[in-house]
Amino acid sequence: MPRHHRYLAPLAAVGLVLTSCGSDDLAIPTSGSDVAGDVTVFAAASLTAAFTEIGAVFEAEYPEAAVVLNFAGSSDLVAQILQSAPADVFASADTSNMDRLVSASGHATEPSMFATNVAEIIVQPGNPLGITGVVDLANDDLIVVQCAPEVPCGRYAAEIYANAGVAVIPKSYEENVNAVVTKVRLGEADAGIVYATDVIGAGDAAQGVAIPADANVIAEYPIAAVADAANLVGAQAFVDFVLAAESQSILAAHGFRTP
Amino acid sequence: MSKRRGGGESLPVPVLALAVVAIAFFALPLIGLLWRAPWSNAWTYLTDDDALTALRLSMVCSLWATGLSVVFGVPLAWLLARGTFPGREAVRALCTLSMVLPPVVGGVALFFALGRRGIVGQYLDQWFGITLPFTTAGVVVAQTFVAMPFLVITVEAALRQLDTRFEDAARTLGASRWYIFRRVTLPSIRPALGAGAVLAWARALGEFGATITFAGNFPGTTQTMPLAVYLSLETNPEEAIVLSLLLIVISFGVLVGLRGRWMGRAEANMATVVP
Image (cartoon, rainbow over all chains, first blue to last red; front, side):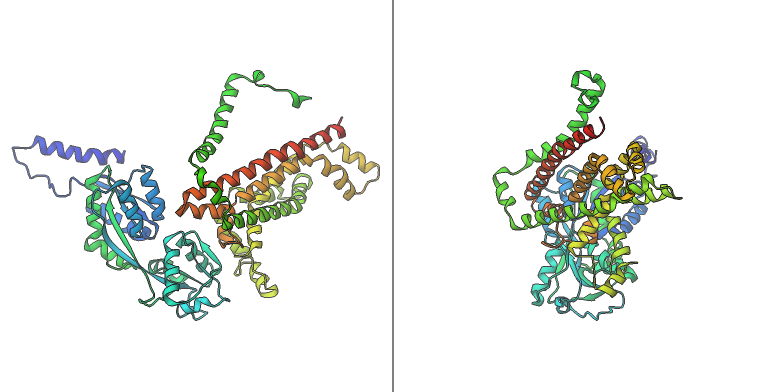
């Protein structure tokens, strides 16, 4: 029922505008009234907390619209969209996956960078082993876990080791960044390379050790309306909303930086 | 005699139709894999060192897991089938819980039990210096955890259906309990034991979630075939398809081969034991 209402309400509004045309119009505010219906957003897993919040604020701004969020690894999301999953907006955790989508199916709006993320070393609360930097991870007695080279956070880890000039042999190559966080949170791993946003997300269960800028990498997050978006107006509005100040401050609160 | 009954014509048409749908349901995804497989590059992927390492590890670990499942699972099945103690139903539910538990949750639960902060694991670490996470032994533990219930329920069902008169007869003839278990009970449940072991092995071979959670993923130590397949899916779906097919071919061969040979012979034995 509420689903139907969402669609019917704007139609009714349009009807009202049309029927009232010529007489005393302007009774209905037209700004934003065309942003309605489901806006389906496919977003990288690292955006889960931030985009859930942004989605709620967006819905408050556009009461006729409902944001449907789908979080997964960026490459999984591209695969889903290319297999014709119904997406209106795609927010990627790296430029290469956005490029893959755009080159395969085009885009409705030019991708815009809306956030960046840096890597950090995640350690146990209180940092009991006194890890101060990437060099310490080369210690063979430490249980270090990192993402597999097949996923972006694993590529970044390799770049960071190369930048710092250390050879780190982890105990495990995890399938995604959440698995790295989980193993450190549970105390089974001593350290791992994750995103700064993951450390904030872990709260008191873990803490971060910053990686100096000269050794660090910067992950860029692009967002775009998808080529065959069913709700193009809603998609465009959501993209604009993410780039606006209110969303940017939400992203900052979750540890993202401005591009 | 009854097992020789059959032939399609004796089945009611609706039953046959549903069975054909079921066959198609299992066959189509496999055909899909064969259809999409990059046949021209297949050999390159199959002879890749990492793939062979993962395959070897998968074989070794799944056989260990099967062995442990038999060693501990048969006594457990016997206890559940024959034992009379309060809370038996609860114990049975407990021991088959890992079948319904999402494997990743199973992996986390294993951390709580056997990890270096776990209930038992912390003492294994402190007293003996044994740590299971991120080791090949950890893979075996994770696989056994999810695979053993398949053996237990199969063997338990067989023990329940077993005609106890042979055991009674042996007892009246003065055989010891251990002798009866070895020479009368075990041979009579051999088909079920075989089926249960194959089921447990197949489950262990395909195990993914508990393994990658508890044992992690490191080539040569803990990266089994399913883990290698999953990760190559990220970057090289072609390789993932070829490796999946390899895993399927091996499992298929073992399932068909063992069923025909081992269990067929066991059924023949049954026929001679129970005329």
